[in-house]
Image 1 (tube, rainbow, N blue to C red):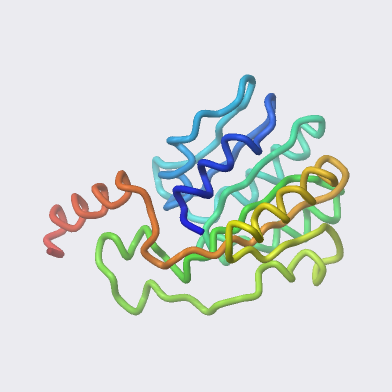
Image 2 (cartoon, helix red, strand yellow; image 1 turned 90 degrees about the vertical axis):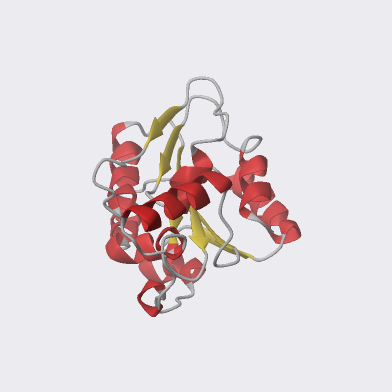
Length: 191
């Protein structure tokens, strides 16, 4: 399973008239290239590059527009910053579809310069909804796993929170992010 194939598949999974929230990092760079269905509102925060923003933003879009599905795309590093809002979503009966991009740390930082500080403690993210009290979750390592998860997610979408952990190689990202990382490294004289 690659990021490119994953986001190609999202083109056919995201429903019209929904909210798509993409976290700063590899999720944003990939999601920004996806053709969204009609009526979709795209949320992201790139000005300050504040990681973790989108978990709270998804809580907000889920409460503000409960009749629209909110789709969150977030990396594992960013998720660890503000993951407690997952519990708040469950508490208030929010029903987003959350895609946790598990690429073993800060890929957006690795494309600038790869050091140990880009590594994070690995969690079993897909278990968090049950630990926090609700939702359905899936752990996807292959395209076949993803297809099973998406089929089940479509069955419960709008009825309960869906959390899909998707595993990728730590350097799997699109060319736009690789170019941006190389430019930042040159600007900061890291290469």
